Image (cartoon, rainbow, N blue to C red; front, side, top):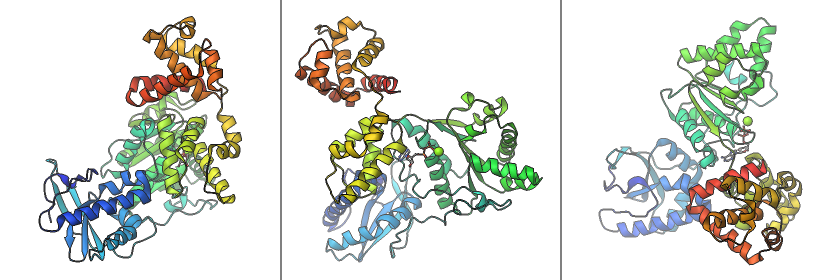
Length: 489
Ligand code: ADP
Ligand code: MG
C-alpha cells in the first residue's frame, strides 16, 4: 500500500492532505476534528511528541487507516491513545468501527512508502508495553544473575516524559541515538551535569527503549553504590571470577554517578577493566557523573581518558523556557490545568533543578486536591511553597544586578543610572530593570527609585520591552541567561 506520494505523509500538522477518490474531503475534515479533539484532550506536548506523527491514509470498509513512521510509534500510540482514537472516529458517525495503523517510512526523496500492513487495533492496552520491571529494591543482589543485579528502573523515566529544551537537547539526542541504534554508535556515552537535571532519567529512558526494541538484549543499569557493593562482595567471597563473568553476560552496561568512585582506587581499577572488556566485546557502556571526565577528582588519568573517548554530553542548567515546558508537560500528564500565570511564576522562581520543580508541582497539586479546589493561584503557590521559594531566592539585590549588568556590557554605573537614552546604555538599563523585576521581590516604584528616581511606568516599559525582545533575539536572550545564572548562583 502506498501513500499518495505527494510528500504529505510527514504528519507535520499542516493539515494539507490530498486523497484520491470521492468522499475524501469529508474524511479529511473528520480527521481534522479528531486531531483537534486529541490535541485538546492530551495537550500540545503529547500532540507534538506523538500524535503529530500520525497521518491519515484512507478508509477501508468500516476502518480508518492511519500511518506512522515506525513500529515503536505505532505500539505507543495504540497503547496510549488507541481506545480514544477509535472512540473519536466512531463519534464522527461515518460508519467507522475501528482504526488500523500502518507503518510507513519516509524515503529520501520525500516520498512515503508503506512497509507492512498492520493488524487493526484490538482491545487497547492500558499499560506501556514494557517488559516486567526489575526486582524491587532491598533485595540482596546475587552474583551471576543479571536481572537481579540491576537497580530497578523507574517507570516514569522514559523518553516520552523527558522534556527537551536547549539545555538538554544534545544529551537527549545522544541518548536516543544509543537507545535506537542497532550497531554501537559510540562508546561510551558519558552524560554529565548537576543534581536533578535528568541524568538518571535519560539512562532509564535508554534502558526502557532498548528493552522495548529488543527484549532479548541484556541491559544492566547499576547505581554506583550497587556496583561497589557487588565488587566488595566479590572481593570478600574471593569470587572475582563470577563478578567479571556477570558483566561479560550483558549487552549494555550503565553505571550512574561514577563521581562516587573518587578515591576508591580498587573499584575504579575494576571499572576500568570492566569497561575495556566490554568495549572489546563491542558492548555499549553508558556512564553518568556530575562532571565531565577531565574534571573528575580522584579518578585515575587512564580511566578518565577512557571515559572521555566516546561522546561526552552535558545536561546544562535549566533555562526559563525549559522549566516552563516541564511544568506544562507535568500538568498535562497529571491531567490538571494550572493557570499560565502560576506556571510562569514557578518557572521564574524555582530555578535550582528539575527535581525541585517537580516536587513543587506535586505539592501544589496535592494541596489543591486536599482543599478540593480547582483554583490554583499564585497566592496559593506562594503559601504552599514558601520554603522552596525561599531556598531558591538567592536574595539578589538591585545593586548586584546593576553592578553585574555594567560589567557584562562594559558600561559605567553613572551611565546606567543617568537619563541618557543612547542605545548602548538604554538597552543594558532595560535589561537591568527586567532582571530586577524577575529576580527580586521589589515593586516597580521601588525599582524606579533605584534607577535614578525613574517613574514606575518607565520601569514597566523597560521590563515589557525586554520580555518582547527576548523571544526573537537569541543574543539578548543569552545575555539574560548568563546574567541570571551568575546572579542566582
Ligand atoms: P539527576 O540524575 O541528573 O540527578 P534525575 O534524572 O534524577 O536527575 O532527574 C530529577 C527529576 O527531574 C526526575 O523526577 C526527572 O524525571 C525530572 N527531570 C529531569 N529532567 C527532566 C526533563 N527534561 N523532562 C522531564 N523531567 C525531567
Ligand atoms: Mg541521578
